[in-house]
View (tube, rainbow, N blue to C red):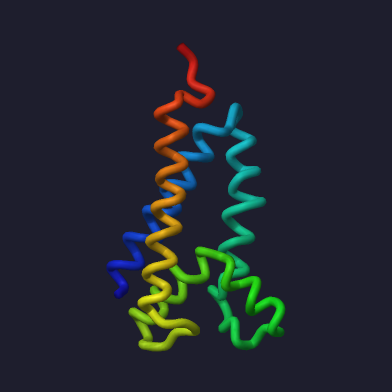
Length: 116
């Protein structure tokens, strides 16, 4: 489980990085992507707490975050404890990776913001 979620999580973040690199015109815009997308998704995914400690509204909101499932599956691999089924986490993380990688590949294929 640990290896599967480490690979999926790393590939998901790598896909986000490719999208950010293609999208950004300047180095400063990369930090915008990091500060306003990646960090909030990470911090609101249950890295430092169990989402069961949140009110029901925020629990539901956390289940819309693909990082939650990656981190929850990674936690299951280490401790055997998770907030959701590891199979559900694996499926959501895998689908999120497919979507994100597809967006990155489409951007590359279409030459989005490419010079030449």
